[in-house]
Image 1 (cartoon, rainbow, N blue to C red):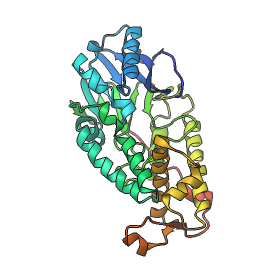
Image 2 (cartoon, rainbow, N blue to C red):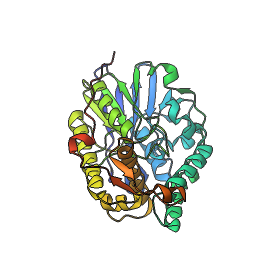
Image 3 (cartoon, rainbow, N blue to C red):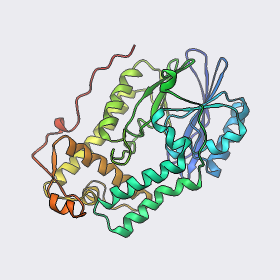
Image 4 (spheres, rainbow, N blue to C red):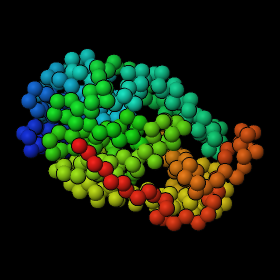
Length: 348
């Protein structure tokens, strides 16, 4: 969401009140968080980034809802990306609310400095293998560490799997891919889907070499599972866009967007290319933090195609010497082969 949304209230079929608060998470980049009141529960879903503007918008939203931060009983995180959990540092002194996240995102939230160092090392290794000039990838890697200045680790009170994926009337489903511990949360006939579907673009992806349980394979399976799990939901509320009322159509648009990107990569791989060259073919010229995002996405696409036997590494000897891998497609690949058919899921 690139422009200011609006404070809006909803009601579930079970009578729960939902207040949607728009936050300027970063300059000209907006996000939504949600306050929910249901019986004895007063719950905040996600917290914004923790920047000054994000925190001020959050407190203003509480005022509009007529709720005190100290009234919160729980804070639930859809996933551990900084625009969704960074506000915890500033909220923690204001509330005794119990804080929960999925197990696979626990380290990022509760031991942020150590996790940042670990993922930063993996990211630097990945960028060093893309074919980017050393100075360029070092500048890009440094952009990843900006969150260290915003967020300090916050202790957690519980994790979702340990609760059996349910907290009172709130149900959870684990949907890795965009983030290892990403979940969707359901209350009555409303689903909070975080960043699983984002209007007009595909959510950010990174290869599993950087973040286990990330990557395209996990993401594609997760959106299929979400579609079946939320099939009878009336409203889908996400982290950055307006209400989704036709989830299957939004998921199909996302799949088609991914298909266009992968098809473009496969077409370019008629000749051997590095990750950096594939990225340029798919996304064109980019810079700054955007360059990091599209480089990670390209790495996720290459990983997916390589593991499925559609592309090969053409320079194993150079790879052993520390030079970047060059990939080339093994054969003509039809669009129907690029993305797996949707599976049928049954939830009880």
